[in-house]
Figure 1 (cartoon, rainbow, N blue to C red):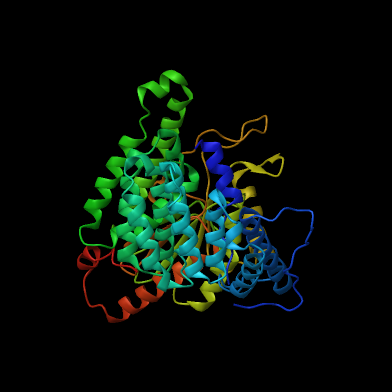
Figure 2: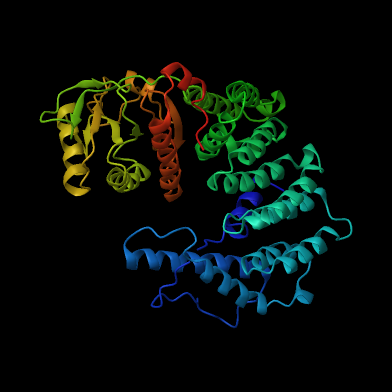
Amino acid sequence: MSCLARAIVGLIICAPVIQAQLVIPSVTVDGPRDPAIQRSAAYALANVTLESLRAELASVQQRRGYIPHDSLLRVAGTRASAWLATLPPSAVHGLQIDPYGKVAVAAGQDTIAQRQIAARLATPRLSLADQAFTLAMAIEAFSSRDVPSRFPIAEQYLSALTALGDSAAFWQFRGRTALLQAYYLMGRTADAARIGQATLQLVGHMDFRDRVAIFSKGGDELYGMIMDAVGAQPHGIATIRTLNASLMRAVVPPPALVAYDSVFLWNADDWKGRMEVRIKNAERVGQPGAPIAASYWANRGTTREARAIAVSDGKIRVVEVGHISCGPCIAAIPAMERLQQRFPEVEFNFLTFTIGLWGNRIVEPKDEADRVTNHLIDSLHVRYPIGVVFAPHVAQADGSAPTQFALPTFDSYPETATPTFHIIDGHGIVRKIVSGYTPEVDATIVQALDFLRHDSATSTTSTTSTTSTARSLP
């Protein structure tokens, strides 16, 4: 199956059903029903997904706030059951069995789903690619953190998918990713490490073009979860180094592919640079953190002068590294403000940098810093410290953005995804790095802070001994 075909399948058929527990009566969750539209299992799965998404968006707009990931579980289940009723199993054949099984899982009909998946796999002369696709879909369907009892079923399908060998490496990667994310978000670190380690070991066996799944920017969050989980295990740092070495080998394109199109050399160079930043970040966990230095500070004292903040003063810290032009970075700020109120003894920081521009104007670094911080304070009501690093390479005279930065602070606190969160304990040890932002990140940070607060209250160990156990965060 081509990369384009896989992308289309991922968007239309394999999009995850948004799940959840509250149903707001005034929200319309039932989409239009055009009798002229042919019913199919793929159509049903796409509509279950879109109807759940529409209900969630309406709920968020009405409540003007984040709702838990499981707040629409009834909506998804009800809609899936309704669609299932319109699709008698006897009328579903071939490729349509795959989405039918996934709709059945969303409806809570696990037995029906397993029967349909088995029927698909029993199809005479079914190609290896179709077997792998079906098994990957089955793993995704049963990898639900809302229903942990389904995990053993997902593991069984994973075993069957693994047995197909290296020819199915792409689909094994995809199936493992779904199970990894579920385990990680549930705090089952040992299981996430087991699945994650095997996931990265598959990369070198995948077609080079498929490796974009881990080496592109979209793979930052996946890589971060795996490093976090693996690093918490015995001999975690050594395992991480082995995995990173295998990934660096996997960025090298086969000579035949380069001969076909030299663009793959560009891919390799881009992936290599991204991996180098990731490796630097991953190996910082468990090590002493550098002082947080900025050219300009707001919400830290009565002035905004430059200073370096030591991190080994007994205070737990969360440092968000990002920029005001980054949507996820700004989306995370209100969440960090809420967490600051929940954990008043923890210091939260937003660390950013200047680029010499404000809107379409070239401005001085201090002017840009004033505008950035005033916006965050006045519009987003940020009360925790905001640090701005003045970039030595600012915008060009023609208004173009700079092409190079030299920011020592960001060598110490690199950004692997936008934003990146560095969690530092009271001894100044970097204990966790979380890349990217989704609402689930809030729960991840809360879990880490609860652990560190308890650890700080009960620990009598020195900084040295803390370093040796610094990767044991949940």
